[in-house]
Length: 97
Image 1: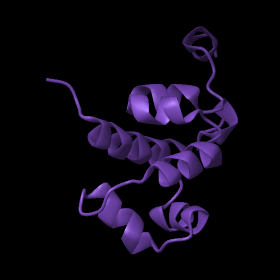
Image 2: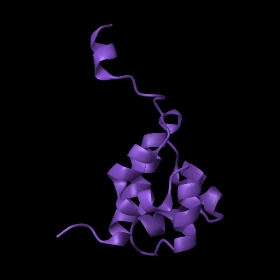
Image 3: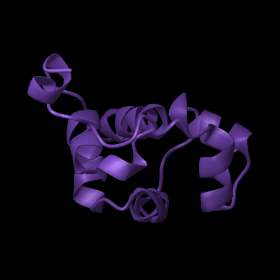
Image 4: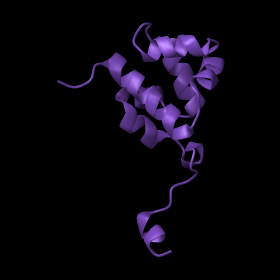
């Protein structure tokens, strides 16, 4: 059985934090909550609300449906300039260097 919606959102948030190199504190500031509150949501001790999901998606410049679809789609929707390593170069370019 696949991931439920809550698990997809938690996984997507974790993937976006990792991909951008942002901390839970930064995301908490965006949401107007503490880092501890973000951590509680990520550990499934508190729920991500729809309002939270909209704010997270807006912060990362992705559609809320991409966030709710899970980590792969959320990170794929993320602008290349938001990735902590900057825009990705195609493998063929890297191999030729």
